[in-house]
Structure formats: structure tokens, C-alpha cells
Image (cartoon, rainbow, N blue to C red; front, top):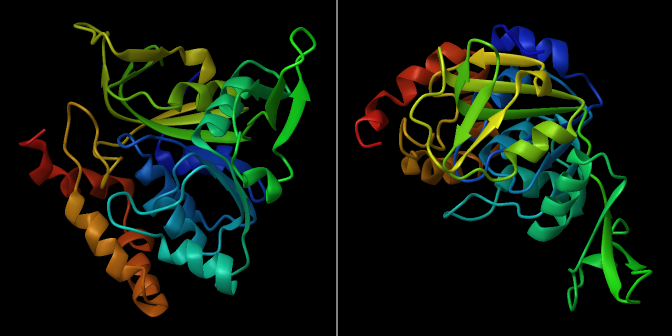
Length: 285
């Protein structure tokens, strides 16, 4: 059952060196505060899973936390490449990183297989693509009923998944609305799940039709972190901070500038700082 605890405690109890970890959120609800806490605690040798690695994975890779990335797109959304991830992959700085690339369909099906407790995902995909030539985990099976050749990938089963959401009720259930992405499957596929939320409410009244409710028994810990998705957005709370994504491209381009920014804005900060970062973005939400 979910317990309400500070983010620092939740990360320390649920993430360990060498873990396979997913920090999921698509377009919005990216669990930035959780990623920053993981950075402050200095974990190493992580296999980081995310359909669309963006700023938080660039930061974790640049801080030497990752040994492997499993993904289906890597980039700074709307801006360009991830410079720290590229430096690690091409130049081994600050350490070499193994990559396992999939299509979006492959990753989504792999998460769904993990959530269902299956060993692999079978689907139509990768036809005419060259990813199977560089990723040995993309294989094929023959349907025993039709003889059709289908793609197969291993199920995604993280040791721990982190997501951000709008609300938790006092019983420990979590509400996610807006673009759901793969958050539900990331929680259900994981051995442990940590959720940061904007607020805790007595009940989920006035429910939006496009939402997911994760029951408390699927979650290890809930942490109240207003603004915890910044610079991405949380539907209904604050908008995306586009300027931060543009600024990151310049910050990450230089190793020394990157390190200095991380020291000031991550290592010396806390989850409480996120509320102030989104204050000016709430009015437009």
C-alpha cells in the first residue's frame, strides 16, 4: 500500500545502485523532481528506461549515473539533440553508455507486456526498419495460428518506476489526467513505484473523462511536490516552460557549464524549490 513520505526518503528507499529505473511521462507530467533527487543521492550503474529521454536523462547521464539507456527517441523536444547523452555515447564522458533503441510501438508494447506479467511483447512492427540489425533484443516469432511473422521484444519490468501526477487522495490512490502516455503501464510493470503529485485531496470529484486512477496497492510511495514536473507541464496546473528547454541546449553544450549549472540548480536545491519555479506559469495554465 502507498505511504505518504518525503521525496528524499522515497528515492532512498526505492532506488538502488545497479537498478533498472523508469522515469516516465509523455510531453507533460515528467518526474523532474524525482530525477533531481536521484541525482543528489548519487546513484550509479543505472539502466534508465524512458520512451522519450529528454532533459532529465541528459542530466542523469551527464552526472555519470547511467550504464545503459533503453528508449525509442532521444532528444530535447522541439529544440534538438541531447548533448550530454551524445557526449557519453560518442566520447565516453563522463562514462560510456550502452544504448538499446526501439520504436515507440516497440516500447509501448514492451511496457504493456511487463504490466501484464508476460515475458515478451508480440506485435506487428519493425517491418522495413533497420533497428533489428543493431538491437539483438528485437526478434521475430511466427504466429502458430496464421503463420504470420511478427516482431517480439522483451517485456519492460523496471525495478522502480517514477511518475508525476496531478492528485492523490488520502487513501493513496493517484489520479492522472490529460495525456496519459505510458505512466499507467510503467507503474504496473514495476516492482516498486514512486509517484510525485501536485496535491492531496479528500476525493476525486468532478472527474475528467480522460484520466487514469492508479490504486494505492500499485504504489510504494507518494510524495507531494507542487511543480514537480517543471520544466514540462502538468495539465490543469501550469504550462510548459519552453524557455528552459531552449536554455538547456546552450547549458549542455559545454561540460564545465553543465557541471556548474547542475551544482547550482540541482545539487544545492530541494523539492521545495519547484513550486517557486512554476509560479509564473500557473496563471496561463
